[in-house]
Length: 449
Ligand SMILES: *[C@@H]1O[C@H](CO)[C@@H](O)[C@H](O)[C@H]1NC(C)=O
Ligand SMILES: *[C@@H]1O[C@H](CO)[C@@H](O)[C@H](O)[C@H]1NC(C)=O
Ligand SMILES: *[C@@H]1O[C@H](CO)[C@@H](O)[C@H](O)[C@H]1NC(C)=O
Ligand SMILES: *[C@@H]1O[C@H](CO)[C@@H](O)[C@H](O)[C@H]1NC(C)=O
Ligand SMILES: *[C@@H]1O[C@H](CO)[C@@H](O)[C@H](O)[C@H]1NC(C)=O
Image (cartoon, rainbow, N blue to C red; front, side, top):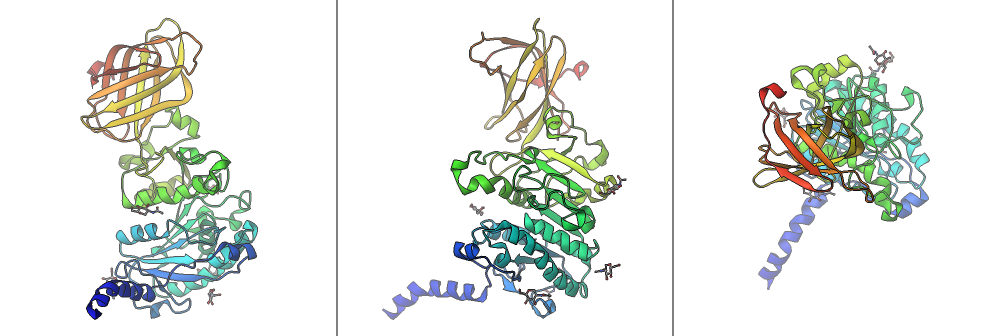
């Protein structure tokens, strides 16, 4: 029976041993946040050699840690407000992803004591104390490594903490990535009281909740506004969904960024005056970026750093799906009709390959279809179909009472925005309202594009 006990308990024993050697993110309860917490800063080091086992680093002597390697780049990940005191749900996944790429000293900044407070005001005020604490640590690091090898990734309030540390270091830190930087109490303040582009050599910002918890205006050299930066697809839009109603859009920034690290797929982002203009297909030009094309959102956007710095500040837009893989595929759909009377309506376009189907519903506005005039629509498909075998169109006016109309299409032309490919065309089809018409598109005739 001794052997049996050994077999039963050995695996558990190993697990306990491993966990005992690891330092974990502070796990607080709601009662902590109800009473309020005061600032403590813990620095948890992760390296690819150490796997998912975190290990505390000394604030005053980082070089004492055997796994801290001064010849490698250093990444800081700084969380935001923690109203319930629990560790962020996404922490372990983003840690794994950041370690899987390049060899880096990954430091998870744990300021849960300080961030856990039912009173957001106090947590927001604590960002300054956390930044002062981190500044002292970065000054220590500076003795052994170059500030340009430091990348700070700040979520929500963490974005402003990164900005304060960056400003204290006179903008010499290599890069700050801000994931939905916090808006409340920071909107309308001076650059010194929030993140701004002078805080690091390169500042890239993602905005996912500009109408609630996030910051509306641009704060970096490049500011990404997925889905316009307001309502993210798949997030509840009524209060009956509980807590996720408040944080889903805000938290989406982290999930989008994680997808970009793992390179599940690429989301190209387009410079534009507004999201509406982008949806209306007015902003598909990427000329200013040269051969590289429009910037791909996320972790690897540093490929565009030089041109973005030259441009000073750029707002870019893209759309996403409601879940991972988040990227959509962009096409322009040009429609010419021969109806005598002007028609207004929406289009749903589907693309089919042998085994896949992609859908784009273009319904943000009613389009005008006028005789012999080309109407350009930007279609965002939920996935990219590489060899289109079939295509379908559905025309709708959204009205139930009116008589059904027909859209008499002289030509429809489908052009991928992100691939150098001959456009596909189809001539002379009739799309009866609310009826899907399916056809096989063919390469357009030369004279037609
Ligand atoms: C930073 O915070 C830690 C723990 O809260 C503390 O031990 C350390 O002395 C602080 N550093 C500075 C420079 O205040
Ligand atoms: C430190 O990192 C460098 C670069 O990745 C590597 O060549 C070196 O072996 C590392 N040193 C240790 C002690 O792991
Ligand atoms: C973490 O990643 C795993 C595997 O990709 C996934 O199943 C899980 O849902 C993720 N967890 C969170 C909280 O996102
Ligand atoms: C930043 O600039 C100030 C004023 O010029 C200087 O006192 C300080 O030492 C500088 N700090 C760093 C980290 O370079
Ligand atoms: C670049 O941006 C800064 C502040 O963001 C502004 O002061 C400056 O005038 C801008 N320069 C150009 C060339 O637009």
